[in-house]
Structures are given as C-alpha cells and as structure tokens.
Length: 343
Image (cartoon, rainbow, N blue to C red):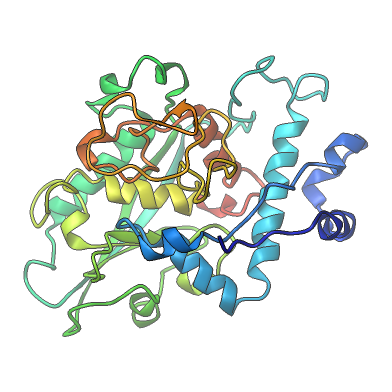
C-alpha cells in the first residue's frame, strides 16, 4: 500500500514547530496530542476500484500538486484532536465519561449551510429540473438531521450511536451552464470552467456528467479554494427526474458532503489497522457494495454497511454516527477549517 506516513521524529518536530492559536493551553497532554495514526493517501486497491466515489483518488492528485496540502490537513486534524482531548474528563472539558465521543460543546446549535448548485449540461436530460434539485436538498436535510424515513432500519447494534448531526442546508442559488462537453472527468475541469462562488461561505455543488462510472467526488477541508466543493453526476443527484437506480436516493451527495465536512470512508481506505478517525464506527478493511446481508463481518467486527460513508446502494444507507457528527462540526466551530460556512 502506498500511503503517506509521517515518522515519529517528523511528527515530534511538527508538533513543536507548529503554532496553534486555538490550542493555547497549560495542559501538557493537549500539546502532545497523538497524531501517529494520521495518514492521507489511499492505497493501490482503492485507486484501481473507485467504487463510484473518486474523492480519495482526487486527494492523491492534489497532494502531488500542492506541497503544502499535507501540512494544512495535518493541522486541521491536530486542532480537532486537541479539542476532543480538551473535553475529556479531567481536562476541564466535560465529556460523557467514556465510550464513543459526543460532539464538543460548540454553542453553534443547528447549523445551516448555504448551497450553490451549478448545473452544467450538454443535453436536456442533464439540465436537471428545479424539482430534482429540491429533492436533493430535502435528502441532505433528512439525512443530516436523521429525519430520513428509513432511519428505523438502523440495526439495534448501531442505533445507540446513530446521530442527528444538527447540520442542515438551504439552497442559495442555481447557476445553469450549457456546454457541448459530454464528460468532465475528475481533474476539476468543471470547477475551473465554472469557478465556485464565495466558497468560504457557501458549499458549491457542480452537477455534471463526470464519466468513467464515477458518481461523485469532493474536496476535503484544507484544499485550494479555487476547487472547493462537490461534484455529482446528474443521474445520482436527488430522487426525481433524471436519476438512475440504484443510486436514485440522493445518498451520493450525502456521502460527498460528508467528505467535504472532513469524513473519511468508513473502512479507513486501508487494511484492518487503518481507521477513519472515528471511534464509534467499526474497523473494516474494505468497502461494501449493493445491499449486504446483516451482519457482514470483517476485521472481527460487524461492518456498519448502512453508514452513508460506505459504498452500499442508496436504499441501504441510513445513518451517520455521533463520532462522525463530532468530526463534521469540528470544522464548523470558530477557528475550524470551514467556520465561515456558519453565519
């Protein structure tokens, strides 16, 4: 597997040298937050099998092009872990006395993220209707607030950690662009052709034919503002109109927005000893596809196949966890990488 691993010596140097205004504290434990398991790149198996989501492969390409991206993402992760460590019992931050993490106290309440949708089309089918766009907005709000009508399908094993993320979305505007190009690929050409609008304060989503069997891809926090946002194919956006089964439930966009808000794939894009940095999601070594039987077991634990960050069909996804909620809200708090999305 080809991954970026920082040596322990390099980690120590970075921790000593990095300035962190938000992490100013007299608690030595907070200064020594463990970053030894942080990695960025996906492995060769994942690169060859995109599974419909090209986010990690796109990250690989961005890391090759931008020498500072790894440092920015490292810093974002470190700040998040410092906040979580600060709220542990005994560190003056409260906490739930053990078990899975609960979202840090952030005083944000329910966060509403404004969304710009860019419809880029070469034919009438790709020029999706307002009704199709609105159906996707409804799915995002239902999935992130856990008001989805299939929430009751979460198995009892995972129901205790299923979470309302207290993040919702509002449509701020739609931009329509006719273009003769029939496939846009995964190199952000659609974004350079139609740049994001105020990406620091708005989530930008491009709906265009990507090609190559790719359903969508997103940019993690820390990336270049000129390419920030999410790209989704029109056949996989929303629940009505020009949509294609089995990805006609709007969950591709839910998955990609999860990446945009700092979630990794639930299996951690590696073997059993790699992680998605969320303690209440089970360890696994592979994605799941279709609608797997329950329970599906890998790495001696039951896979959370119904999590939005797996690769299962739309009809078989129905949950985020409390730990995933914590990570997403962690980039929205003051000083977070996406704090300006919060009005």
